[in-house]
Image 1 (cartoon, rainbow, N blue to C red):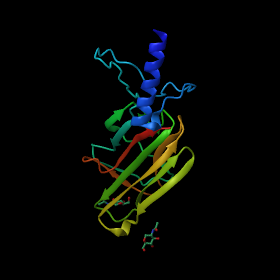
Image 2: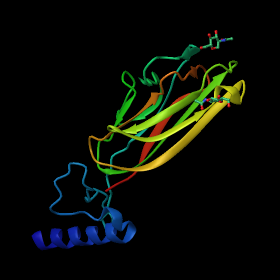
Image 3: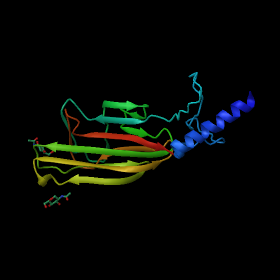
Image 4: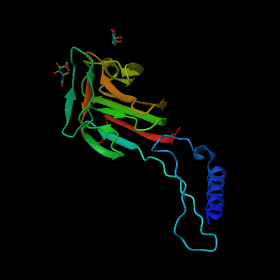
Length: 191
Ligand SMILES: *[C@@H]1O[C@H](CO)[C@@H](O)[C@H](O)[C@H]1NC(C)=O
Ligand SMILES: *[C@@H]1O[C@H](CO)[C@@H](O)[C@H](O)[C@H]1NC(C)=O
């Protein structure tokens, strides 16, 4: 029986390796999110099925409704997107605006900002990974009555790394319906 099980496990590993070698199970892996290969209970002639279990992480959240102007403030200020559209895995905190990577992996993170009807203030977003500013994107107030910014980055994150956005000092953003000022991200694959 044990020989049979061994054969099945190695077949199973091989099947994972062939289908997606990125998730080849490592026997010495300590991660609770390590890929799991197991036998299903399907009783067919070849009863072996492999399933790669990986964490599901995806979020998207916006500022408003209700409609409101954020800023201008005298200091750079954390942006808190309290209207959660999606938060699979619960890694985005809608009270702090911070996304915390639950596992080491490659993530895609993006933001969109807007402001309407006023040419007095610059608009923009600073994107941070931990203490490090990764990107500033903005528009000068005089650029027009309807201003939009949007960008994204692919990031290699360790478990526990945090990603968040901040409103630059003296800048404004508009929060309201339609997800025009929003923060989103998802895990592409674990590492
Ligand atoms: C435009 O922004 C300035 C500076 O924040 C503010 O004083 C003014 O009331 C705003 N105008 C409108 C129409 O909202
Ligand atoms: C916005 O544009 C005006 C006019 O060109 C300029 O005087 C001002 O310095 C600009 N503001 C910033 C923050 O770049």
